[in-house]
Length: 360
Image: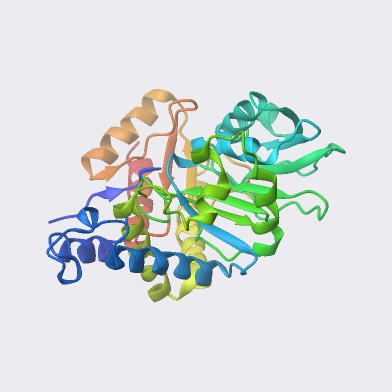
């Protein structure tokens, strides 16, 4: 069967090796006579999967023992609320840097829970860039929140803000596992899995143990308190077992690729191919993001007019390309090239872009 040329922004394509491995064990996992999603989450067979996923994530991201690794549900969107619910107090303020729609949503949710402050924003520049300067961090800052990669606008943080006095919180849903990071620079990272980590259904939270004391609030609903997951190894209730199993398979695949440095080099190569197709097109294709802030995960671009863009997307679909429509809020085109995207598919898209330009 021919696989789709799947450039969807999320849920995104998974490595074919992972899907084949899951398919092999679909009806009979490790001789149990059951599928993974049929196993008790208290069984030894499932707990081994659970523990292995945590260990692999720690190894790949070099997560120190001073951090907890949690598996939650609700996606990154629930974390927009959980972060301020756990970290904000009446005496403190959540600081936010706005770089796109998802950071705006995180900020909007935090405003419902406590005091917030916008430390920097590129909204006036149509979110084409990452702010060069953080205008201010409030004196009573509980944390500084960023979105590391912006799927809609195609921008990405290449150098993270640093302030040792203020905990740094990052939504890394769309670029976690795509490059090495210095884990010690972050106090809390959260990520929905459905782009680089696995399928939708599981959300990874990596949090410094020091921060857990802030969420030790008896008034918080049990399932919205990070301590609940930390104390029970993310097994307080039934976790998304199938998603965590597939997460484990993706992490094993990442190890076989050579780890984060190898994945980063591959992602740079893929991004360079598409950005070269844009930059060498004599403005036939125009990138949305400023060059210095371009994303290695989501390549966003526009054509001269909507009619031409519609024709491009229609012909691309006829050629087998899926998911190249830009987000409905800004239109245009977008190619999402996460870890699992084969280099061959990117070459084929670049060739199609050149052919379409030459024939238009």
